[in-house]
Length: 484
Image (cartoon, rainbow, N blue to C red; front, side, top):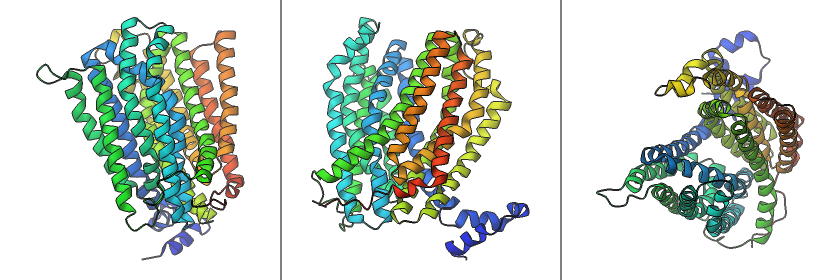
């Protein structure tokens, strides 16, 4: 059997078209360092983990829909506001992945424990913020026009979910720890455990048993919070056990390290601003659809739900790319970092490309699933949804490339660039939204065209940045940080 270096050499030979149809070519592509096997080994457990989170959220909403439409709407509204604010602190915790990956690649393993605990401390403190603002949630929703009963339900949902926020922000650095050292299967197993707990508790706490524990919207939030705290405890135990030898100094670093904390906040906040800006753009986009009309809103909801089928695999490849690039940048092996990124782009193209063809060629059957039980209410929205889904088919590849290229730059430590470029692009596109809709009277297709423009600009900027290689100078390992 050939070594990774030999297979890489085989793959890097001058390319002839005929070689694309040979087993030797694809074997070399798959087995080389930074090739298909290495990326898939990292990405598949992450894809499963993120997909289970989506299923868990869907289960919450489905159970609440059966309990009562007002409860489901309250959870959706409060949940949307909740996630809008969660992205910033969660993004800082997720950036621990970059530090861990680069320290691991550079064989600076004794620095890993400290940065993980700085992320945990940030998460626990930020989690308390969500608990503290609970009394403001009801008045906020009443101020934007919600009824008294709806605002009470929304505040109730937030109240019980907020306690779980402390756990979800606290466990994110442990997720980053295992991803950064390439042990993604443990993340998948613990995430699936949390998913199972939530699936069992949801119907029990929402509907009750024998007339007891019928908690409705509070039960849905409690089920999620309990599952999150169990995940936190298991992640803590798994990390503690993994470092029994002291290889990563996790057991010795449970304290504040000001220099490491400062660096994590600096780079992590820049990365978090980038992801938060993208999220707020999508949130504004959805709100704009609601302003345009019910048909546009319904069509957009259908398209976004179907887009989610492709989004989770792309997220998995993005997280895997960030970890692999971080490993290789830490080791100063920039060629392998580039190769792993190209492999992720190729693999995501297969998934996104398949859905792209399906949405472009056969959009109607996908849309008709949503109108299965009430076709009359979707009659006017259906033609818009079909056209919008074709637009989704056009940009699916761009959406995947945006995630992977930004993740590659993040893994390299190029956080400032992705923040500034994303803010610039978001500013341009939001200006276009307001001018087109409120100034010129344009509608749904104008907004969706700007969605495509957003991805074209983002991908173009990230691709140029990655190709020029400036990210090679952004490593985080060489900074003089004391292990105190």
